[in-house]
Amino acid sequence: MRNISLKFKKVWKSAFIFASLSFLIVTVTQAQDLVEGKTLFKNKCASCHNLDRESTGPALTPKLNELDEAWAIKWIKNWKALVDSGDKQAIEAAKLKPTEMTTFPTLTDDQIKNIIAYAKVGEPKKVAEVGAAVKDEGASSLSIAGVIAIIILSIVILVVLGRAVKMLERLILQKQGIDIVEEEKVSLAVGVKGLFKNKKFVFFFVLCLVMVLGSFGWMGMWDTGVHTGYQPVQPIKFSHELHAGINQIDCQYCHTSAFKSKNSTIPSLNVCMNCHKSVQAIQENGSISPEIQKIYTALGYDPTTQTYDKSKEKPVEWVRVHNLPDFAYFNHSQHVVVGEEAIRKEKGLKPNEPVCFACHGPVNTMEEVYQYSPLTMKWCVNCHKDADISGKKNDAFYANVIAAHEKIKKGEKITPAMLGGLECGKCHY
Image (tube, rainbow, N blue to C red; front, side):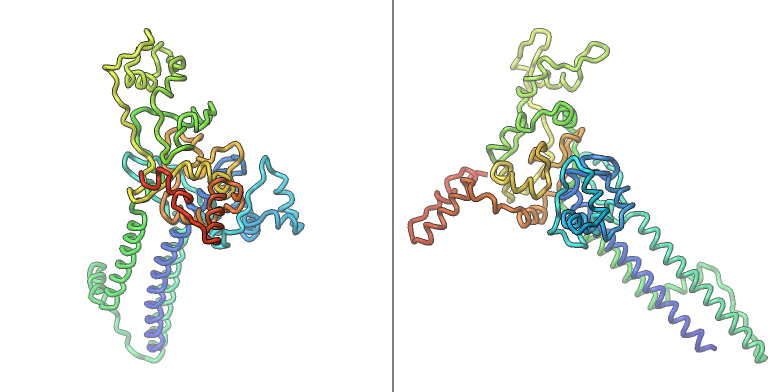
């Protein structure tokens, strides 16, 4: 029986170590799954779906909590094939539409599971402080609480079994007439101190500490320079929701350079004055809206006389929201003009939505603009891998490339100019 007790103690220690390692591994893995699910949701689903409210499509959090996961995976990957197969649930779901849902055959089952896991959990919207980035939520409190509950329950069961084994040992020894020596009780402090003298325990504790700190360090380094959710305080509280959403002002009206140059510049205040010379949002006390007054002050404009005083002009110090490293080159016009069709198809944008939404998100719902996409190299590369440009054969840019390749095949002279070598952006950043 003594051997049984010794074996049980070894099993108890092994089980405790296994449970602790499982907790760490599951927590880190679950966090990474939810992070990827959140990224995929924003890139693939957010243009039509919200988590907690109806949009073009239904609210995903309550809907996905109702649906069977295996069926949801098939629906998201290729709902048309599911309808064609005669699935009754799919046929009924296909009837609920103002617009047709995009299929995602390139997504793997694991990627779709990550989207579903994130959508089921959801998250409250956080407003970032000035100069700060919104961090990913990681593992949900519910999943962590579940793992902790399982570990605690396992430990309780092991402790109960341990006490039961000791009681059986005492009964057997009493029947054999052997005197039982009572174990001396020690205080908690002495017990903990003795625990840390155990080399195996110290090694296990240090190993866990290294794993936890290493995981947090790795995630911290991975997120360095990623400013998803960055929302600085601007000198004038310009509402995109009011202008682009409620009033439906086209993006090109203010950001005209995005469609003809590398940069999408901030419009001058003269563009604002096209409307706000008349629109003054008069308040109850008869004064002009303080935000519109800031425009007048910056331009040295007197609304009563409708005259400008150039000596009072001063620039508005806007805070840049979207920042790329100096070594990264991005051309707006190349994407929103030449690549518009491919980007729209890849991101599942509706015809009435500007192509800008593909990267900047639903700007027409933002009271204040924040960085919607991660803007990382991986994010850009994934789009370049998935975007279909096979339908661009008649586009002038691709037609020139094809013509240049035909010349190369024939051994004719080819110059950099024929491949766009005279474009300003080739040299001037």
